[in-house]
Length: 229
Figure (cartoon, rainbow, N blue to C red):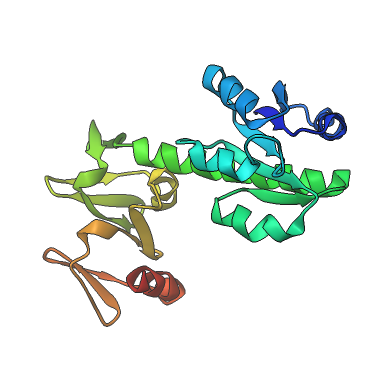
């Protein structure tokens, strides 16, 4: 993860760099002592994370954020706690109040890392358009947009699509792992349904076209949350 420090105090740079040296996956790209140096650095480099002071000459840290179209992850490092709320309104990852300990610093870095992992996972899910499935002694390309629902059927799995029914030896749990959670939901130990194909909820059943899919007791709350959102 490539980072830069934006702070008008040299001692702040030394402290942050010292903490960062304990983390092998952090790579420093540069040190900036005002917002305009930061703009120049970020225009010529790919930056994943910035450590940002608020009170700086010429342009404040928050004013800098407001000028940026695409903002890296931001950890604010400030001696002023009263600006914290404004910082979170600007979608910062964390707010470290100077002086901060190594333990508190590591907690902030962990939060940023978790956010990046989540964002990467979402991006991978959104980019997946299809997968290949072996069934009926053939290999089928299954497009996500075509799937209606999936049913566990003994030692087989039935994949119902707009175009065909594919019967496979794949376990339903294996298919669940590769399906994006933003598009599919497990509603029963034997059923996964495509969210955008749901026509209506009727008692303990979901209707998808001419099919009715049972909702399992264990999955009721997940389904309720889906319809509440």
